[in-house]
Image 1: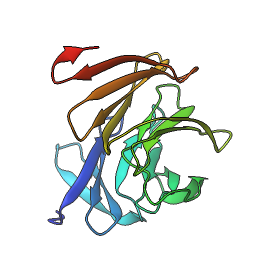
Image 2 (image 1 turned 135 degrees about the vertical axis):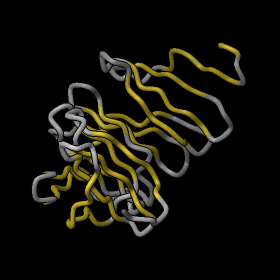
Image 3 (image 1 turned 120 degrees about the vertical axis):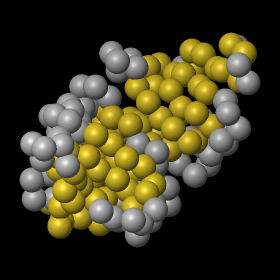
Length: 171
């Protein structure tokens, strides 16, 4: 196995493929064999720190240069979804329908991207570095956590913030 420091990991919906972002800006992939042992693949997705899998098993990565890519996990050929627009594009989350990606900018904004249209849909204001992003199951809400411990929830369609959680209090 690979002993380099991991940044973030993800498990494909099939349960037999996992990925981990490594300290050398690569995503390493492992396949689970029938005996339950994980075997590392030779190919690696370069320039990636954070990742998520879509429902159909495609790998989406965000790099520290701001690029977002979709990878064919069969041959690890990448397709750029968003070119580098900021020097930061993580953490990354993918809506359950696979149509929208949420990333964070260094200034704390949460950026919503169209996968199909390959464009910015909306920038949600933020104040602190974002440490996590997630979509609701129906894809109508996006949530993000700040380094301070605060959590915000916004409507994806309007961008309106619908809830804020701060130190265990609901606002």
